[in-house]
Image 1 (cartoon, rainbow, N blue to C red):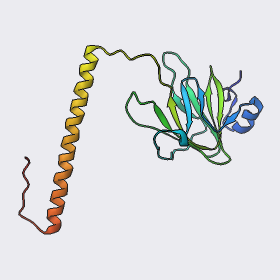
Image 2: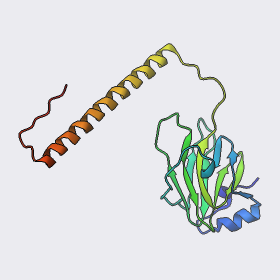
Image 3: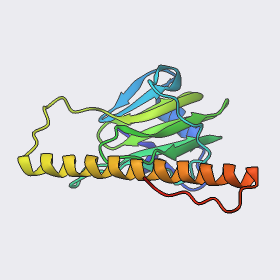
Image 4: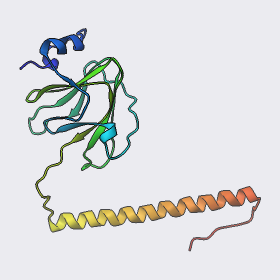
Amino acid sequence: MKLLSSVRTDDADLARLAAELDIPTIDGLQHQGDVSVVPASMASEDHRPPVTPVPAAGIAVVRGEAGGHTHLLLASGDVRYDVREGAADDLTLGSLEVADGAIAWLDHPEHGNTGIAPGRYVLRRKREMAPRVLTPDTVRKLERARKQARKQAALDQAARERAELERAAREQGWTNVRFVAD
């Protein structure tokens, strides 16, 4: 099995190489190992269109862990991909947009290449079906983190409300009004 990443050069036409390697290009739901390419119309939540062009060297979508192989996103034409920033356990990796006339490929040494046709997509990790086992210490840490997040959200909301009241007071021309926290 030949891979685009192993035969490309800086000046290579990836579309021509993909045709020679007979890599199918799909515009629907597809999977490559533990990465899923989900059409945006099938995604449960809306994602902002990506703005970062995929460079000639590609983008590592998922890096191999413990000696594993990397899922590399390659492109021919106007292909854009933005990583989704979020929680460590979030399954969404990022947003992908392949412009008309362009093609993107996921490249992986064990799974081969898959071609991605023009359209908007969400790249996700596959969910493990094994039950998650939490130790009592982990449960305590999670609960502490949730409590701290709720407390911070309440403080942030109070600060926003206080700023709004102060702004309204300035607009009304009240100059000697002072707000005191409850």
